[in-house]
Amino acid sequence: MREWDLDEAAADEFAFHMTDWLDDLDSLNALLASSSWNPEQAARTLRAILCHVPAHIAADSFIAYGLPVKDVFRLGAVVGDGAAERKPGEAYDRS
View 1 (tube, one colour):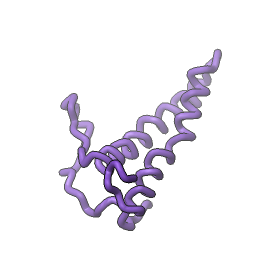
View 2 (cartoon, rainbow, N blue to C red):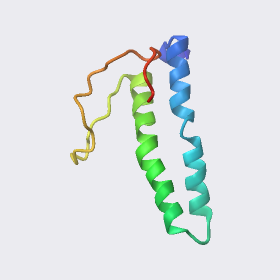
View 3 (cartoon, rainbow, N blue to C red):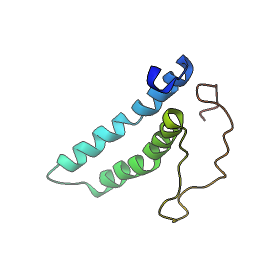
């Protein structure tokens, strides 16, 4: 990704974070397009979106622009000190 001066490993990680949650987005789209909602399915879909997607978006915000996530609404929604433990593209344990 020439615009952000990312090496190949960092660009691959960026692509992973931009695409890993597309199934969640498809599920949300199907839920919103449905004329009848199943409450349990709606809850599962919303949980997947709210718990899975933000971490990927936060990672890409940092990879692309060097911007860490801030708790702009001051709800205590972000935990940890935000200190980086590795550089984008370096191996890590995904478990």
